[in-house]
Amino acid sequence: MANTSSAKKNVRKMERKTAVNQARRSRVRTFLRRVEDALSAGDKSAANAALKLAEPELMRAVSRGVYHKNTAARKISRLSSRCKALS
Image 1: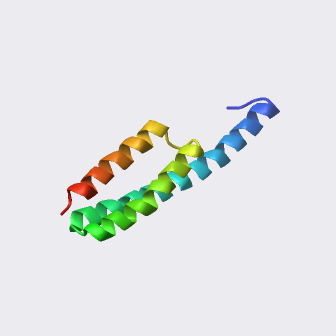
Image 2 (image 1 turned 135 degrees about the vertical axis):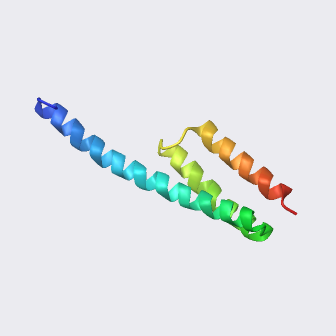
């Protein structure tokens, strides 16, 4: 348990940051799920459209510090290769 006032303030700050980061991560997962759903349905045009929307959302999360850059690049690369393989 935090004792000093500065430690208590840090706890409050981290709670706010955690809530914001959870919302950002959830938003990215929603966009990624749309791509996955289109891929599993076999709809190439929908998958490509969903990927075009998911990519900047994922990179935005990287710039905010929610994801590591390589993690985002790996996810985008794997999704785009799956979209390309769909024919």
